[in-house]
Image 1 (tube, rainbow, N blue to C red):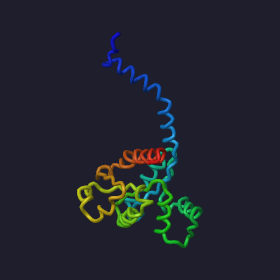
Image 2 (cartoon, rainbow, N blue to C red):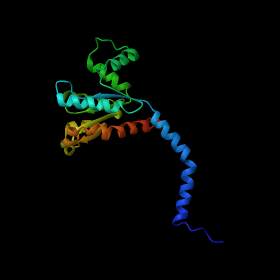
Image 3 (tube, one colour):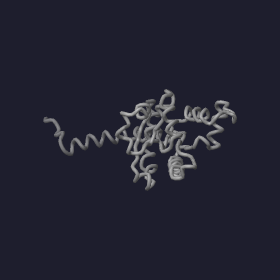
Image 4 (cartoon, one colour):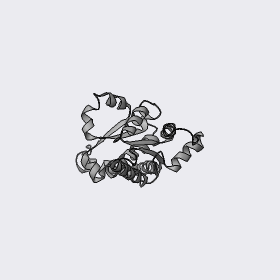
Length: 194
């Protein structure tokens, strides 16, 4: 009796049978990932930077439209109350201390680095071991070539850096194109304990 031909259709058949055998387990893992709740803090320019503020609103709304994701600005009342309830941060504490606590309890910190204040926050958060792995900062494409050679770039070496083009910024595709994958990666990391 000869060995079965493992080329062509027989191999596909074996792979198909194996795929069908594990399909239920794959679907269970996919469901666990999809159901993982994610709290996101969105850092970015304030209202005085009109274009950046509008983009920040779009980012928050885009993230918030993903099932299971709660996306907030640090100044949002719900997020401010979370810091108060969990850590006793009272109203008289300064904004930076509150943001530090919010980013510490968040699952993901997304930063749109188009203003000086956000650049400072990312630089500081990138040095805090409990926060840095959660930070995904979005920088203008023009900074890509200097990221690893400049002091600000070296400081940010502990955070995930993504770059956006002027076109992505103008067409508002940054949020819709990139953020679902960022959230999915965070969910996978948490489900598998990575």
